[in-house]
Image (cartoon, rainbow, N blue to C red; front, side):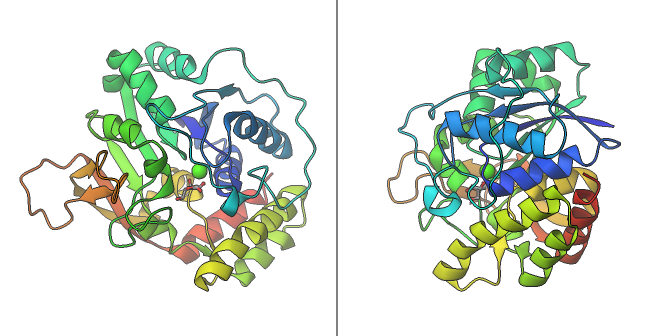
Length: 311
Ligand code: BDR
Ligand code: CA
């Protein structure tokens, strides 16, 4: 059983990632969900996380609110993709489960200090502000992290918020820089992977056919989310970015990648937030992460549909 902390900015795709984790209690022990400002402001991301826990029938999961703005910059949000609430699509009731009193950053620090070394995996699905703040405040926790499995960045697929940058890294490039330089073991799900995990009509129908409130809500979420990519890019369906992180924890063999060096651009206006990956090893910079490149999409959607049906 792997102990995880999900750090997130829900977000329909974050929501599906959370549902997949909560549907897999034999493999994943969700110690807590820490929320960060990203797709929408913090007061909505923490609310959305609680809505999703209740949808999953898991109101006992601990949800924490964290940083409400990037380390050094003004928050950039993505209502153009996720809608005004961040969770547009289904109509879901407001949550009644409590938000925890502790700050998300303190929860991350205290948990990593309390659990045995190398037993807690961090799963960031949004800007890396909470994780970087925790690492700055308590550098001793870095060597206690088992692994960071995150969604962010891109190499051949370059940007989805600017021509050069992926949203999560662009929103807080200084935080990403701290995390990528931390020395913790990092596995990255970049756009190159997530743009191959498309919710086609058939896959959406399979979610709906589950017939449960979770199945129907996921179908409605991905339908809403889908219109952006379909209308804008003529894409075959919505890329399910964040669930790649939880799917990797459950079935790592669905993904293949390379150990590379990644540096984050924090200065240039033109390429701010770019993940400069040394894919061809043209520098002597030491690899600092595994950048995934390929996904078995059929296997990924089979896993997702089967697990969501358990909730
Ligand atoms: C990432 O940005 C957000 O919009 C999604 O939730 C995902 O984490 C994709 O670039
Ligand atoms: Ca996200």
